[in-house]
Length: 243
Image (cartoon, rainbow, N blue to C red):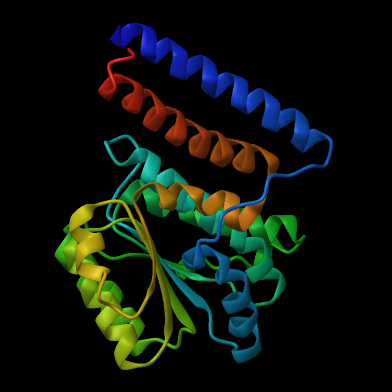
């Protein structure tokens, strides 16, 4: 029975991707549900360009190749989706990472943005900062950046522990806009009372779709929403004894 349900969900996912993909090619892009943690970022990016102060992206302590790989990839895709506009505005972001693999990929995201603009010589690798591997050290280092560097707003997206509250506390003291998308219940609980736009759990993986609006991301997000309801329906049928 478990194997059968797994196959049913897989077929539903493939069917959903196929249908949404066809509709996207015809120019009928699906509408996203509101997620303020991401929806407000383009506006804040415009304000950043006006003020001349960059956005600070903190991509967490996760890395590539471990159990938090998907979280880190979603964070990098969201960063990549905003970097082109930030570079075009002349306000490339400052990126803080807590894992060496993230540092290499974040540097590449910024470098490619300048290359696409036709000005690769303006790429500045010092915009990406490696803070420290330990979550507490990383959070304290990012909080110090928020407190002592001229940034317009802070965006926390990726793998964080409860120490992330250090960063939001520093931003609150300066009355700066802040947004957070985290994957762990411990970090979500710590940030829940903070004055920040918060995305929790699977909402983190909606970041690329909300920011980039590319058909492949929108199709994936719509399929995730569809599967969520499909799983709930199957669980209901099991509880009722139908399955």
